[in-house]
Image 1: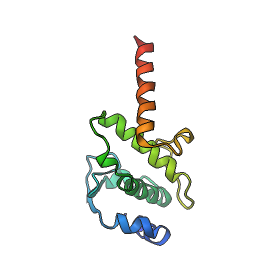
Image 2: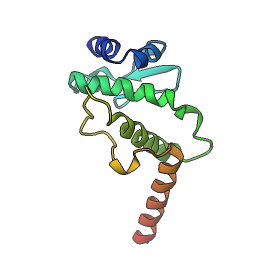
Image 3: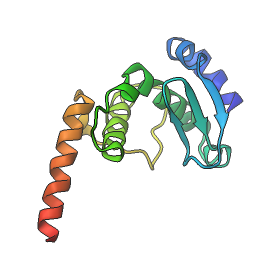
Length: 136
């Protein structure tokens, strides 16, 4: 975490300024990392499975959730599906930044570039409904 924070500060000072205001907490119950807009929790075991560039990506990813106010925009939507939509939007945005690598396990699709989280959510919701209808 320390090296990733240093790299964030050196390479992305604007984002680092926002990130450094978060309370950082270790939590082995989270998959890799998450935020509520005030704090970021990360699983040190899983976090360390990533290389330095991917770790910086993860810090930027959580920071972007805050910048995009994702923690305030759910508004009664399915929380799991909304989180997936948020991840697609954040990762599409970050895919255009040099010096970082998108982890192989990240939710990413070029088709979501430039879309809002609400637009992605509706598309994913429609896809899920279509899959449910096909299975019935």
